Length: 169
Image (cartoon, rainbow, N blue to C red; front, top):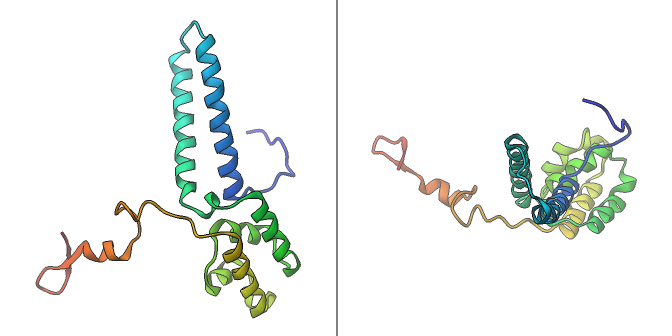
């Protein structure tokens, strides 16, 4: 592997989501142009590689659509950076906060190293308020079709079998 830019940093899920969605659109447009002009069939290896890359992109987009990345915008990410700028957070801590959308104090404590020593209770609440204001909760379709982490669905799947232990239905 060749390092192209050693000064490049880590990407947020939002940045990956945006880049892949743009790439998928660009590839679809190019494919339409190529298919209109193509007179010969691509090699089977090239076609298979292209399909695998397309499948990988689709899988990543599908995965990120159920995360906060799907509801973020470049403006909201910039605004979040502005709100937490003076708190002394590292770039990777900000990355974690952006990617995971903490909703409780304990989540912030898990994402920020030595949080109790470095941040005041007010700063933790400011972080949570910024997250609530700027990043709405993602909508998941998985819980609607029964494939998500819906507690009601999970408890319904286990029923006592008479001797006090649960058994899957």
